[in-house]
Image 1 (cartoon, one colour):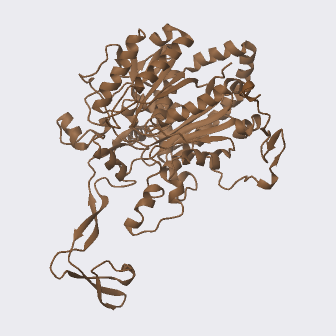
Image 2: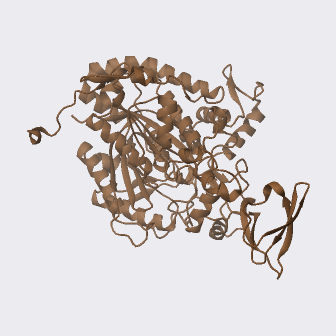
Length: 631
């Protein structure tokens, strides 16, 4: 029997806050939650933003004094304003004063004489330069006409909106993050949040399975492009600095997996980083799902982290006319100052997408192990389909691949659960990038598939309206919100759009512009992704309620009763972790140089490989998978 990949934990950080325990989801459906959930959402965000924490069961200021009613109202406004898409803040760089260089040509027949510090004089001298005299650490140099000088300048970005982490939240301050690019900081914190949210000690999981039955799959699409990664390496000499020994290795796009193995889990199991532009998360999720289905892995941590809110990346996408610039937003609305909160408008009248930053990770187990450990069941992933676009005129142009992935995903669910589920109990998390081309092409794809399968008024939403486009983790953002919808029933509407664009193909679709209470109709979700270069993917997520029904069908009532009994302690520990986060800064797992494996103690025989620190050996009793072909 094919094993079912069950989601037993999830976590991360993004523009909506902390993902675990549905805090970020509740920020996104803020208008649809009751006062108790609002208070808990504000508390979770205040703890992240260093504005308050729970002390003795009460939300208090950082100095420990309680909030009064007026202060609580002000706090609520502050955390709402400091989350989701908004104007770029100056915590990392000033979008009005971005550093750059200008090249100046020296004019005049005889050139010019400049005086510089002796230590700054280039060696060897550029062609046409001549030292005239030197004194007291200063050098006078004749610069020949036609020479070029580079001087530092400042410029204003044309794009000033972004899906930023909550104001005041500094991932670097949560652990010893020296020289770590921001994307890898997010990987450490997000993977820790996911693992700790399970309510099961990682050591318990490790001691239950063979070491090579664990996998970690994660990547970034753009690698780490800030000063501590590839960006710093490429800019160092141009800025008069030296390349460091860390910038190249920490810049690799495999690091969101490598860091998790080395500093969070201490895993010696399978690892990988599958990159597929905007579909990168689903590419890695497919590896996780297929590994669990086949029995190669019993536990997989899968996710992505990306921090692309950098001037160079913003200008790169803006040069492609892919981003919503301030001037285009003003032109759309007929105003002089853009509405930054509404910069991303999937399926509405729009002018480009909005970049965001995010780190999201998920813990998956096979169904038998999930029951054995009393794990939480947040849902299951039944399939992920990936297809390319064929020949292309432009690398960013759409193609047929996404028609295939979405159609196969729907067909697979129909084969599992029948027509009623796909027609009346499913919804779509659209890629919804907020570009004019996406709104027409993706709406046509969804509409064509819906019509083919007899689906009417298919609920559709697009999470990028709130958190922006985080590139590699874009579908991980979709997954995070989807787990909230499947648990609580409320699908967020695209509230940044007042009306749908006139050029959509949506006769079979119900693209939501306000939150929709699907209730128990939220049983299956399709996560759709359309990436640059023809990287198309669609993943299927099944609700916890239907997942439990599948588990009961396979394992029986007695096994389910035993699972529920074991789950009580798991839930208690998980909620204790959530309370810990509400009471102060998050405490990520970071084990630098801890519990190192002594290679001299590794032993091997024909039955297995024994590695110190692991309860079970790596099993070498491998079956012949090719049968009679080997005779």
